[in-house]
Amino acid sequence: MNLPRVARTLAQLHPVQVLARPVALGGRALGRGPTAALAPRLRSGFAPPNAPFVAFAESERVRGRARLAAIPEGSLLHAYERAYGYELGADPTVPAPSAWDDPVASHPFPASVRARRLAVAARLGRSGLSAELARACRAVALGLELHLLANHLLENAIGLVCGGAVARGLEAEAWWRLGSRLLSWQLPEQFLDDGGHFELSASYHLALTAGLLEAIELSQAAGREVPELWRVTAQKALAWAAAVRAPDGTYPLFNDAALDSAPEIDSVLALGAALGLHRAAGAPGAPPDDGPALLHLAATGWVILRFGERAWLAFDAGMDGAAYQPGHVHADALTFELWLEGERAVVDYGVSSYIADRDREETRATRAHNTVELGGADSSEVWSSFRVGRRARAQVRRIDRAPLHLAVEAEHDGYRFLPGAPVHRRELELSERELVIRDEIVGGTTSACSRLRLDAAALQRRSIALEGVQLTPERSPGVWYPCFRQPRAAVVFSGRGEVRDGWRGGFRLRW
Image (cartoon, rainbow, N blue to C red; front, side):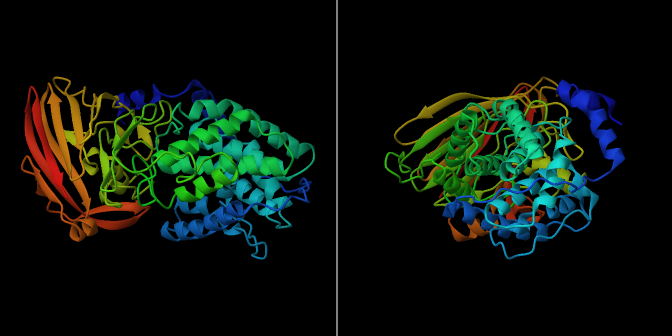
């Protein structure tokens, strides 16, 4: 065991996580699933739901089925997602199978998601769900994931609110009140000033935003007063989602993010618009989406550069995830993705595994991202499946908006543990037909390797010229994972150099 690494990891935990860990372990050791006895009755007489709400429920059924098919059977992730209840959808005639044959269904996180899907199905007219809903909400209430916090605890809260909204009686009221209290605590904690979720993954952001929107709709339908905090948070979260929406309707894959692991971004925005919480692009008063523009999501640390219809770039120039829950962090400081004429061209590696194996190591490693690796080490100390010790600290140094180009400069200190404490500085300059990347290593004595990953199909379809410091294609075939465990071919270029009390490098893309 690497005790210094473990110590660096534990030092970042929240006190609540430490205190709640023995309780969580004790509850898991008991291993008893919740009972369905004396389940609260479901409400009836809901007003008809709007079309986007129905469409969203059905799209989640389709997505959930496809996602489950891509996950290896026998894995914990497969068991979790099998218990989510996505098969319920919007059609009340489709049978709702029980998930309780697997003990994993009693784990609070899958029970939270299932409670939400059951509540939506009840809202859409499906009957006979009271026992299933009771078991799910009871599993959540008895096993709140205080030892994890972050998206797990927020899903716990949303599941309880949704279940309490569609049921009636004292127990249902307790679910709703407990979930509401948790939301009052966690929404300001987890959603940043710019609207982004603090784990800095667009996938988790969309999943949680969708859950919050469903909680708002279900509470309104039940005649409950929706706290203003929920609405304000949802509005900011939707604005953030619109800001990071790429031209092809997807989003950046920084950190743990995959296009099949969350609702489609346009579906979430449509649901928000139907609830009066978001103004769709093209609506009266909406900002124009043409011409050069630069948006700095300061709290998230992402910078979006757009040059008309030609180019759209996302730059990760912020901190590596939530301070006390960095489980979905990648060692990708100062990485970027680039879309050309609406198509993703420079790509993130994506996610190939969630278990502690070589694929997971590759998923999170600096060498898998479009940035500079020093000394063969990772910019953040990622290890095991979801652990992080030493963390990179990044910040934007300069932003430049000009008629013919957009530029941003940032730096990070993730390699401060190497001799000479080198700092990586990167400048990206985007114009209509060109991207220039300038890298500088300040201080230190080590080796440097800059990498660039391009989608192989995009590279074949369009003319992209690459110039730089001896950038050459790597010999081994490259891949990237836009969806979980579903590889696509990539071409990876690399350029190497020696740092001697500093180093300068970079490259240029023309199209």
